[in-house]
Image (cartoon, helix red, strand yellow):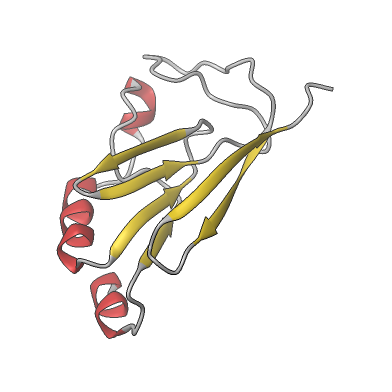
Length: 119
């Protein structure tokens, strides 16, 4: 269905938003509850030629990297953060945060993490 939505859209540039990460987080416990068939999704997104980025949550931590030519961006939680690259569930000491995303006409995007005060 996502393929059809993208194919039928007039948009030259597409941002896909989803809950689970479409890539491994290198955190054993998080990767066990990650997106099923993420590799299939990434291949399908790359094949569209129009997906510029995918934005996700679920992992309660910041992430920003390029995979298969698509920028993959994870956002921290407005609650507690999970400790990156941990084998077992662990909470980080970082404060709540949110991510602002600005989309540009050329298909690029800028993003800014905003961390709240600890109080």
